[in-house]
Image (cartoon, rainbow, N blue to C red; front, side, top):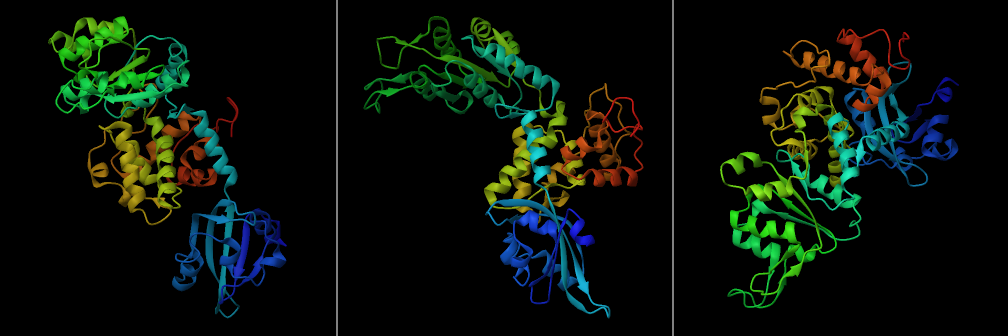
Amino acid sequence: MILDSITDGVFAVDPDWKITFFNCAAEQITGVKKADAIGQYCREVFKAGICEQRCSLRQTIESNQPIMSQFIYIVDSKGDRIPVSISTAVLRDHSGKVIGGIETFRDLRMVEQLRKELTDQHSFLGIISNNREMHRLFKMLELISKDETTILLEGESGTGKELFARAIHSLSHRKTGPMITVNCGALPDTLLESELFGYKAGAFTDAKRDKPGRLALAQNGSLFLDEIGDISPLLQVKLLRVLQDKVYEPLGSIKSEKANVRIVVSTNKNLVELVQKGLFREDLYYRINIVKLILPPLRKRKEDIPLLVEYFAQKFSLLRGKEIYGMSPEAMSILMYYDYPGNIRELENIIEYATLVCTGHMVRIEHLPESVHRKPAHRIIPSSEQVMPSASSLVDVEKDFIYVNLRRNNWSRKSTAAQMGIHPTTLWRRIRRLNLQIPERDGRSSGKSS
């Protein structure tokens, strides 16, 4: 009666792996009736990815070691994948003889839905952020995208300038047209010129036929010129004509073509310094600097790291057919205090590597590249926030990580736990274990005690 009244699914198996007990919650979660489950092999009922090779219940029975809160997917009677958290233990009779195993599983669909809603709340046209400055930029995008003004995106390499360019295109009236990207820093001058403007047959030795350039391909759409600070002065002159007069001439042509495109440019360099050094035309700079958006580096928006880690972990887990649920608190702490000189692109590469070498369901410190947890961390936390003492150990880092996240969530343990991907009870245990001092409230109501 007790097992049938709890919300967690519970089932037991005999030494032949046939189900001997199946409670009411197990029926509700799987959609399989108790009468149909009893006597069946557990793998035939749950159809989990671990059933054939890495059965947790088998590991527990063979090693006599219980498994706690392991994340897996099972398949219900309708064929839908259900995320669950399982715990296993050995089943013994009164004499201590092993007579099978018992497993509990908790339905995590509501948790997954909450995490999805949280991600959606912090996503803008594929750009994930909970940072105030980034949200200010999102509002700017909505205001400026519908105009034809040239936009300059400034930011370090890997900060997401191309994502912003695509967002600008998606919000403009040209969204049904093409979005063409040119990496100006990846091509030599002669090749870049032909790529941009195209050429006519006979323009040079190998020009056997006409070839349209990126400007022609972007007609009625948008052209994104990435790393514009790398183009030569000669090409700057030709680009200036495109911006001023909306015309250009393909190589070998004597006729001007109309450029009906919206141009967005980006750079990871200081264009003002390049102008002062005579490496970038001043008139071109003022032509592209009508609207400038400066994208903050990841080290200045560290509150976005948990969101980005979760997004990339899910992305690469699906690509590799793995069932990785998240990061251990220790691994997340390391990621929170790494500087990311390569910004979001570097974080993506780190998570791709971690999901590649991770053989379990949780990414741990040993799965992170050595360069990440070997490099000294420089913590950058907004000065408006009260912070814990400097981290001298993983325990201190974990305390700091939990404290800052609680503060950002107005001390709500429920919201903080959801953002961290753990149960609120687990978060509370860690707060007590770490002897973390927090205000006598949990954020559910202002000024009221919890």
